[in-house]
Image 1 (cartoon, rainbow, N blue to C red):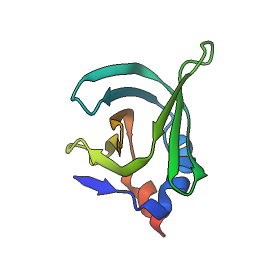
Image 2: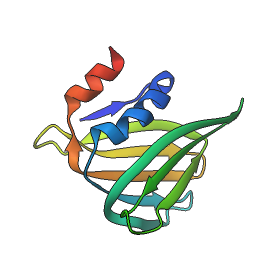
Image 3: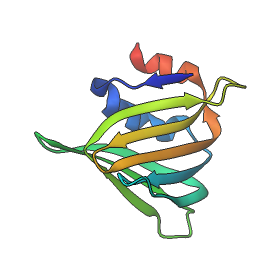
Length: 123
């Protein structure tokens, strides 16, 4: 099952994500040429934010890493879609897919995000 986050809710979703998810994340990036690489694996999520740079350029920033380490600071320029995917078994959202002009970023959550929390976002 997939759920697309409406663009008008992106900022709120990003703010709430750290509150909703207190586990580890793994991040994989796939470029426009199809080349895929693991950016980070099983580290704590520190923050997710949506920044409006100007009228035509938004940036989603993800900070992840262990407290004793310098965090990974990942910028996703000009996001187009934010899509949550479930694992099918528990119904929890296990992955956030961010499509952008520069490719695709997949954030895998362990444990997954409770779908009831997303229902509160739209309310």
